[in-house]
View 1 (cartoon, helix red, strand yellow):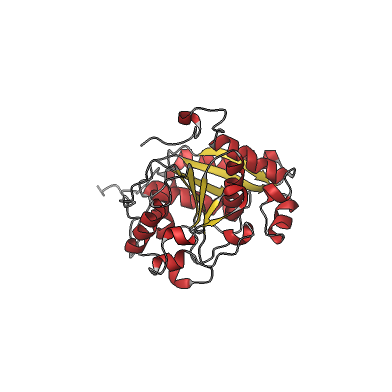
View 2 (view 1 turned 90 degrees about the horizontal axis):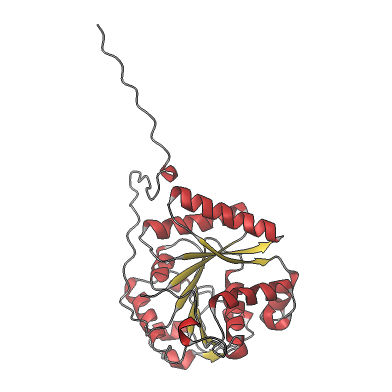
Length: 302
């Protein structure tokens, strides 16, 4: 009697197995996030990231910082997109020195900080410097330690990270208390945002991941986009992504960019400005109306 032929059951796709990624020949598994030795002196640190460019990440960082400052928070805003910096332009500032000079040992962190709208303190970065696109571990740690010297009189530090899913981005995320990922309803942005969430999860990120949907044409579209990412992350990663809010598509944003002014001050009654202020209200309670322990209600405890 001939032996019965064995049939192989096809393996499920990689994304159908939570937390598992098929590694092909010549491809390395994602390295776990390296714990940073940077010691933050009790200052909540929020990393603003996105899977792709053009989704409104830097506008979120700039306007959120100003909106928080209007709520009496002392904000240190850091342009951590070292090769394609633009926060100075969005805030209408003209710095002489930036993080490039700090990394080169030519300036101290205190010497490059400049005052922005509503009292926001900006740590500017350079633009068009390819050598700063990817920092090695030593320079990244030096950068983080340098920023730590600026937080004595700061309530909240916000870092605007480069777009994409590079190792530099994930390592910078690991140095923060929270990660806010910005996406739009566009399929490419949705896909890249999920890719960044998945990579952080695979590399061991254990803190909350917040989501902001930008440039939505309606509240319903924003809610649908956030829910889709939440469902995909919950199904394939067993991870709960927390929606922080949405910023609608608003021509006032581009008008403010051309004026080199945050939309929250240029057009304070615009839909986008109101949305940025709503996000700020979720992150910070005014010191005049809240006790110290409740001024940053979303802060993660160590």
